[in-house]
Image (cartoon, rainbow, N blue to C red; front, side, top):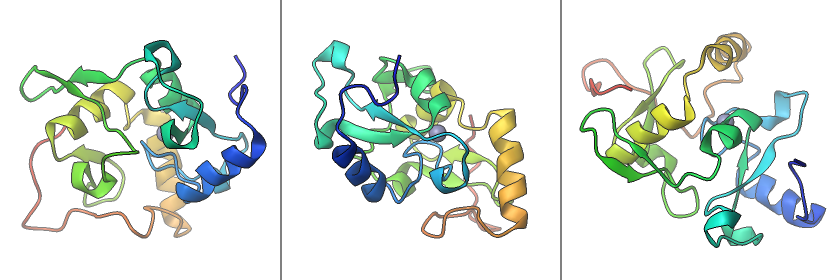
Length: 157
Ligand SMILES: [Zn+2]
């Protein structure tokens, strides 16, 4: 499986730019990685999604593999099957927030929680990268929200 497939390089560059080089799910930055991120089909090809700019998202290899051909996941708080985060329709800061220490992604909504669980956004190795990146000021991404003392939602996945 080639991560780039039939997607022209020009489109890939536009997708990267739109994403500010962040995996659109776990917000790891492609800038600091040794391997290039992949093109995720938000609506999988197997479900009728297309290879177009409007259906593509920048995703790290792990998020892309965990998402696979899924578009829904289970919200651990309710047990309900809900839509996964859709980077073309949804706003990251409305569904996720960084824990106060900046290391864990916390789902704020059913979609956020289901996405954290399904894509395993707080997997151990990525937490280690976040720790290392944080010490050199590369993490969390500047536009992301971080929990503050006092208004921290308790929900977590
Ligand atoms: Zn990712």
